[in-house]
Image 1 (cartoon, helix red, strand yellow):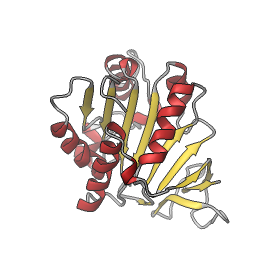
Image 2 (cartoon, rainbow, N blue to C red; image 1 turned 30 degrees about the vertical axis):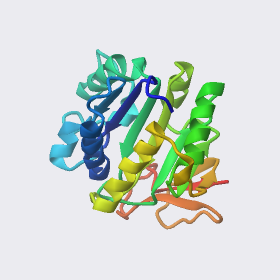
Image 3 (cartoon, one colour; image 1 turned 120 degrees about the vertical axis):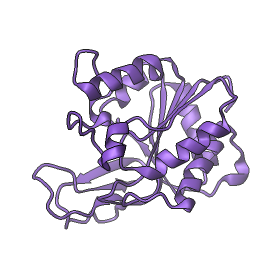
Image 4 (cartoon, one colour; image 1 turned 120 degrees about the horizontal axis):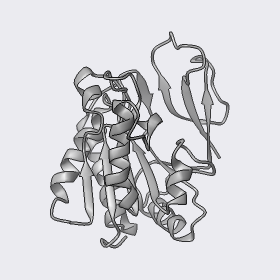
Length: 235
């Protein structure tokens, strides 16, 4: 991928996913001289300070209210600012995550199968050059705003590595490497990742999807009715 592409890199959407935050801080320093790359290492500062995925200011998850509203709650206004100032004007949005304090996680990349040929080309190049062990090349929008981003012609890549609120050096290093491979792709890093095409959510912490690859699973057993307990990737 050539550098004229405008890239926005974010982390800390979930305040207790420290692997992504630490990786983004390194990436910010590494690419600080490249004007086409913007790095925002900590989106949910309030959640970070209180060790929660959501913002304790209004008990909202930033990722669930994006792209927000200028008339909404604090989190909605924060997401509106993020969208209007950065995401709306980018070609590629890379969002770094790591397992929250109550999650066991399998490292993976999550891409949305776009209707645009050039975005599909970007995603295919990522699949061909990434050293990530698993890629979910989803046939369906994987976030509630994925379709909006695609409509605006914005490529979106979500990265997940690390779990249970940790920031292990090897996990931080993996995220940094995956970002580097997207910005400066080379076939030498290709490790033939396992590629899946859909995700199924489980609402019972004890349920297991046969022939499914576990992406993440909550460690708390007292999960409110209707909340997702685990996610499995399927071919």
